Amino acid sequence: MQPIYQGQCGAERFSFHGLGDLLAKANEEKSGDQLAGIAAESHRQRIAAKKALADCRLSDFLDHPILSDQDDDVTKLLLDSYDRTKFETLRSITVGELRELLLDDRTSADELKSIGRAILPEIAAATAKLMSNKDLVLVASRIRNVSRLRTTIGQPGVLAIRIQPNHPSDDVKGILLSTMEGLAYGCGDAVIGVNPATESVEKVSDILTALYQLIDRAEIPTQACCLAHITTQLACLQRGVPIDLLFQSIAGTEAANRSFGITLAMLREGREAVIDSHRHSSRSYAGEQVMYFETGQGSALSAEAHHGIDQLTLEARAYGVARTLDPFLVNSVVGFIGPEYLYDERQIIRAGLEDHFMGKLLGLPMGCDVCYTNHADADQNSVENLMILLATAGCNFFMGVPGSDDVMLNYQSTSYHDAMMLRRLLGLTPAPEFAQWLSHFGFTSNDGLMLEDTQDSLQRLLACCP
Image (cartoon, rainbow, N blue to C red):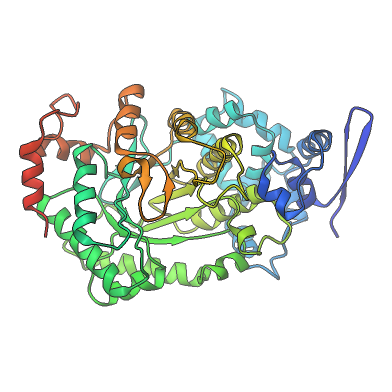
C-alpha cells in the first residue's frame, strides 16, 4: 500500500498518492510527463510536491518501491545491486538532506562515489528534482568516473569525442571519409561509432571490418562500434568479426527493454561473449568495460511502458541497469526522441543536466549527444549552450558529427569543430593515448595544438584505408 503524501504551497494544500505520483508532480515541466497525464497541473502543485519530496526519508524508497519487483525485472535488479552497508548510514536522512550533503564542500569526491553506489536510482532522480541547473553542474563536476578500453577517458582535463560518421546508404567509403575528417580534427578517442541505416549482419560486418582495418593499419588507439541491435552485433562476432564495444539502447522498465527486443539476460550474455573474444584477440584491451549504452528521457513513454512513472525517474532506472554491467560509455541522447517528450531548449537543457548528474552520481562514465530534432523549438545555439554547461560539469564525451547535421538520422548534434572549440575554451585534451597518436601522426604539434597543414598526415591516413 502506497502512502499518501501531503504538500502545501501558500494556503493551497495537495495530496500525492504514493511515491510515484509525488516524483512525477515534483519534476520540472516536461512535455512527455504532460503527454502521459502525470505532470503537475500548476506551479503551486509542483512546488508543494518538491517540498513534500524533500521531507521523504531515503528508507521510503526501499519500503515503497514505485514498481514491484514481482512485475518488473529492472526493479529486482536495482534492489539487488546497491551497497546495503553504506545505505544503512543514509537511510534515515531525507532527500533534502541528501541534496545538502552532495552540495557540501566538505563531502569529498570519494564520499560522493560511495553515496552513489549506496542509493537506488529513484533516490538520485528525487535529488535531481530538488536541484537547480547550477547545482546539477556543480555536483557532477566533482565526480570523475574513469573508463578504460583501448583509450582512457573521464579524467580531469580530458574531453573525448565519438566520431559519428553515419551514411544514409551505409556506403563504407563515405563512412571512412567522414572518419578521416574527424580524426584530422582530433576526434575519435571515445569511439568511432556508426549507426547503420540497415539492420543487416552483412552490412554491419562490412562496416566493422573496414573500421578495424583503418584502426589497425594506422595504429590508432581507439575502439570501433556499429550501433546495430545487440543480436546483429553478436551474429557478426560469431562470423569472426571483432567487436570492441557491444552497443545497446536500454530503458528503465522490463516492458520498455522488451520493446527494444532485449532482456537483462541478453545484455549479460552478450557482455561475457565480447569479453571472452577479447581474451583471444591479438588486440590490446585495458579491461573488461566492453559495453556502450544509449538512453534518453521519454523512451519508456514512447514504448507505452512507463507504468505511470515520470520520464526523469525512468531514465535514472536505466542508469541503474547500466551500472551493473560496468560500461565503457553511457550516452544520453537527450533531444533525439522529439518535442513530444522534451518540447524546447529549456526542457532539453534541463534534461541534459539532470541525466548527466544522475549518471555521474550512480557511477557511470557519462557522455551526451547534445542534440535536437528539426521539429523541436531549439536551434544550434541551444546545442552550444548545453554543450558548454555539460563540459563545465565534466562530461566524459560528446558526439562529433560532420557539420553537426546527421545525414542518416536527420537530426542536429555537435560537430568536430565544436570539439576543437570546447577543448580550446576550457583547456581540455583528448585521451592521453590518443593525444600521443595525434602528435605522432602529424595532426598536432608537440604542445597539443591542432596543426593547420595536415595534408601529408591525411595522405598517410588515406593509404591506411581498406
